Length: 419
Image 1 (cartoon, rainbow, N blue to C red):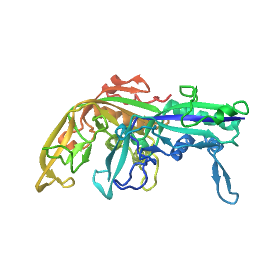
Image 2 (image 1 turned 135 degrees about the vertical axis):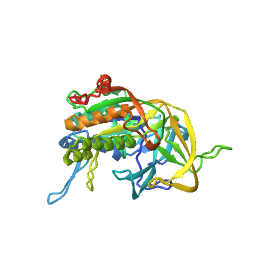
Image 3 (image 1 turned 180 degrees about the vertical axis):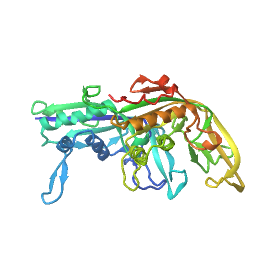
Image 4 (image 1 turned 120 degrees about the vertical axis):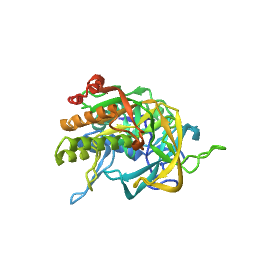
């Protein structure tokens, strides 16, 4: 008989958005532990690990509930703890910021009562969670299945929280293991603290060979001028300086950010325009919507995933102009509007989608990337005054350089991209 523990360390690669569903500061505040620090609940960890396994294996590891005439409850064979920041964490080690969202129609008009705000957290410190094999677990059944999920997580990372297909919640994963054999190591086990004890054994690195990888598109973009994803503010703490009405979205390092929501919105809208301009039928438009998780009243997870791009520029321009009504384009009487936008810089963006994606959609996505490089598609707000133009200086598809194919305006470089 053995007692087995796994130590899971997570490091943020993107802003984390795990909310409480309500809040005092925003519509959805960040979930915190008893110390007031951001955390990843054990329920979230169990859920994402479960999703990595086939249903039968997931039930064997994490338990299940069956309802109906023959109701059955099988408890989890693994005890999953919360992922928390280390002791000694200070508030200066992380940043919680507010972001805005608003529902828009296909024509860019706002949807009434669809504006909301939420908190995200950025942190360089690791979150640590402990997984413990239950005393009554069948080791021969549970351990191989659980370690398969953990190895996949270690190889590919995990996504936690809301809007994970739009650049939020990506973490890197490192797994260590500690096991005790009874009765030979009983005394060692009694002296062991899972939270602070040593974990000498590391799970193997590298992806599992049978895992089917998505099509991964990596773009390097160079901004041609100014750009902004707007953050409205009523006060910025600067002495003797008037606060702008809006600023460009920034991360903890002070770099400007083009979030995954902006990438997804621009690509979906442009792919629909290309499809309509090419005379493709309504079925293709519905396929585009389904790819992006837009299916009318039916909720569907997006099959295409975007990571937000950090643009390495510190240059900002402050502009004051007449305030313009967004929906009528009419100047507002006696109203001036001051904005601070980012200018120039380069950044990396990533798009992932399933290998089985329809070739028509892959060609439309490639055509949209080509148009982004040509300046026929923009990112962020205020495109009507020339903001958001960029050049795609490099393009890779699953590690293969396809920059020349993109520059030659080909649309077949995404076909066969999955491995």
